[in-house]
Image 1 (cartoon, rainbow, N blue to C red):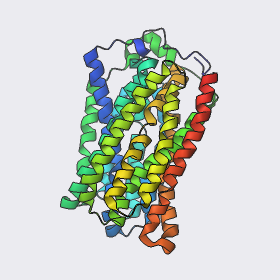
Image 2: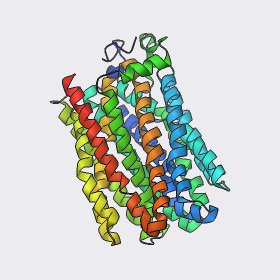
Image 3: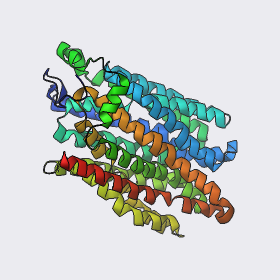
Image 4: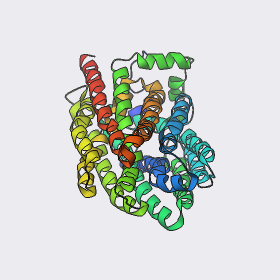
Length: 431
């Protein structure tokens, strides 16, 4: 099967026709949501621990930005592509389970770090492990659910992301304040090991049940040719570019808002987690669910409907976020920043579903990897890092207020995302 083949589900009985009872579908979605909870919990715990780590280890904002973004993104994105290739050929459940166990152990290793280099190496291990989580999960969801239900299924999985961020801020802040930042890393690593076991016990691999399915997915097509074929599909490039700038905004918000309130308004880590965690968590839950549900609804009458909702959301977020970043009163700033957190959470489920719908069935894990590579190598890699470097650059002139102005990169990235997604929307409408 080549990249130019039809992207319908294989006739072998796999794909959206794979038989799952309603109870089994609820269980597999629960596992996928749990996967995203521990994924974001282990990834974003750095945000609430950044200040105590900085003070103990003598880190700069640039180094915090590198730990939160660049070093994680480079390895996460680079390994996502070959792991996606493996997931299109081999057992996705085993790959997903091994990845969850691996990144959890490396999260615990962060708590043993003695300097910046040790932290960076441990974060690289977390990144490599997390690279094996989402691509096989998206591919399995596309086997379990038909195209018109995929955005909602992915949205349910993605609901775990704001829950993970919420737990990272609230639980991470509380543990750090009471038991130290090192113990926070070790404790939050434990749930990922349970998710790894649950994946083995609950998730079915359709390819195990059908020789025809294995033959459908087997191919001698080269890795480079498969990637180039995906990029050549109508609408793929502008959708990926729009996702990059959306991720730039989202990851900058998650990485730097906790630091913003601790530094500008002198909140403690525990206070920051208790107040900011629920705000980001609830906003993320609503935005993620709305993106999937509205995207699926709009797609019924508009082929580009999933892209359209992701395009509109950052337009509403930009002015509110800019006003919140510059606001001198802490609770007013929080109120202004809450709604943008919701809007910025909208994009991932509908864009991930759009990429899965564009891609042929035999290349969906690789397509998910390409999506993740784009979002994380450029979005996660450049977002928090750029904010950190700009904050350091402006510090001579503005002192601690430099972070306010560096955060204005967030609404600028959101507007760039909307511009590219407009091109992707037009391409799908014309396809």
